[in-house]
Amino acid sequence: MKVLISVLLVSGFILSIKARCQKMMWRTPNLQGTLSKAITQLVGTAGGIYLSLELLLTFLGIPEELWNPPSLYYFKPLAVFSLFIAILQPYGQLLLERVKKGRG
Image (tube, rainbow, N blue to C red):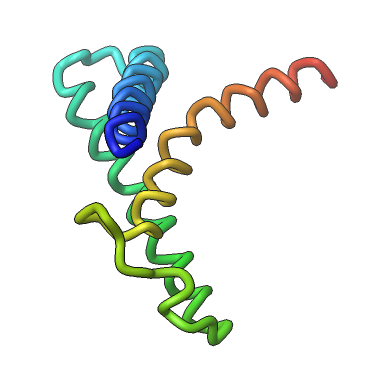
């Protein structure tokens, strides 16, 4: 089970970076550093989501044991969830653009 989750997370990470690189190719004529920009964007998005969720759960007074239990992995479950949302973000954005084109 651990291996399956790790494989899914790594493959999602790679696909998300590929989608971000393809999106950036159309924005900037300079292809140098596109991969590093995509990785920076992914990590920045995941970090922002993580901080927002942690602050929200702390503000609501939810005990930390519920949303940050001891894990079998070395990662915090909330951080993995944030990374998962950041991986799905470019695909959600693409879906939203297609829905907007369909309406307009």
